[in-house]
Length: 463
Ligand SMILES: *[C@@H]1O[C@H](CO)[C@@H](O)[C@H](O)[C@H]1NC(C)=O
Ligand SMILES: [Ca+2]
Image 1 (cartoon, helix red, strand yellow):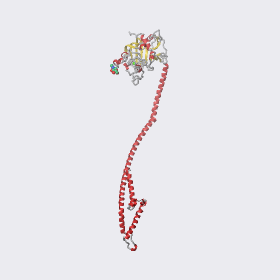
Image 2 (cartoon, helix red, strand yellow):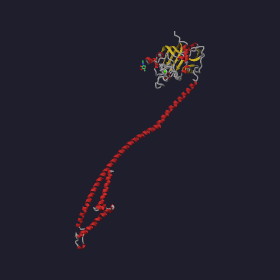
Image 3 (cartoon, protein in one colour):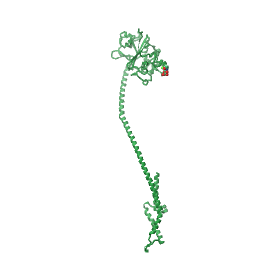
Image 4 (cartoon, protein in one colour):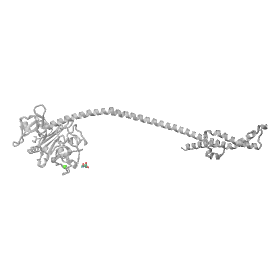
């Protein structure tokens, strides 16, 4: 802008200068509005004016005798050569400053023009530079655009092809899961229908019955299956599963875990009665396969153990087929009034004595807290454990999954949750506690057994 202003000044200056020239060096005439003339016709007037003056001067020269023609008749020669020189000198005097002025103006103008030219050059260079930068930017933008287009293509491909494919796969998986859920629901419905009545069985019961399973053996019931049992003549007979093969047989099955089909996280009343399936008929015409059960009501177990010395056999198997057992020659369960206090004694076996010793993993009072001998029975709705008595939020039974003779809390947990495959973690457990079917002294807290069973029979000292 500054330069453009300069340029304008120069142009105006130049025009002013040319006006000045035309006026024959008489400033008064320039200032006079009437003396103004159109720029286009200035030159004609430039010559006209001096002529008038010359005419006046010629008259003066005539009077003063000036240059004469050789012939008198020809009169005065005007302007003569000498007069011309004089006039020219005079004119030159007037014109020279104007010319000088003009020259200076031209110089100035040239200079201005040069600087403008320089400026234009600079500007062109700058424009070129900017164009280069712009081109560079363009290149960069192009690169970004290319990269963006590539990404867009990739994303579009993902959205158009990969996503639908994955969705299809997931839908397939979902469909399979849905089918599984439907099958499970169907199984549950069937199971629920079957379990409407507690301890109901549909297979035939052999004619042989007895006071004890051992009694049944004596009467010819040598196969392990369901029999009718009548502990004393005054009470009604009831069905039991007799194990007639393990360790000379004669065992009444009182608890059995084998496939996780029965939920053991139950109320006090369920344990007082009984739940689960005593036995199944798998095609032989009789109930020869035991089901998952807490078969004998706690009060019946209590009743049986009070009838005389009773022994307990706990058998268990891990998921690789290894089997161990724990046997107690003395086993009693008190009545409901004392919450079915457990007492066990004289251990033998291969599974380690958890009932009396607690877990080997712990020491001192920590181990003492896992001893089950002498404990009362607890369910999630009846807390009789040794853990912060009176605080309903601290219940071994609700945390560890089943009803049991919990202390604080356990070294074995046969009524815990069934975990398929054995190993489980605290993240899989409902409360982060070892709530599986645990026998700590054999497999530790984070291994849930494949099967475990508890059987009792009258104890007779082996001779
Ligand atoms: C019992 O367990 C607590 C907590 O894990 C521990 O600090 C303490 O040392 C244990 N006591 C014994 C005797 O091991
Ligand atoms: Ca408690």
